[in-house]
Amino acid sequence: MVNNLIFTNLFSLQMLFQFKFKRKKNTQEKSKSKLNMNDWMELTKEERLEIDSNEKNESMRNKKELLKTIREEYMKIKNKK
Image 1 (cartoon, rainbow, N blue to C red):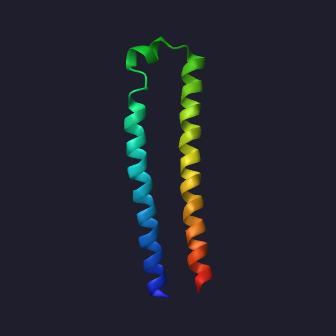
Image 2 (image 1 turned 90 degrees about the vertical axis):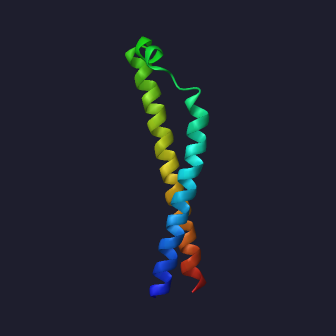
């Protein structure tokens, strides 16, 4: 029982680290396309809200995807027993 908990925790940490490192690579690529402060201030309020909402939606999708993979792996481990 304790071994299973340890393994599950280690696996979850591994998934989180993989997600974080993958995200860092993606953010570095996206940083080129991000707006600088002057461009941001020149946008209308509606345009800024749209960009913000798109970024929030993308972030939420990534989080849901991570949770989904963790749950799938957990179920695989659980079903092996």
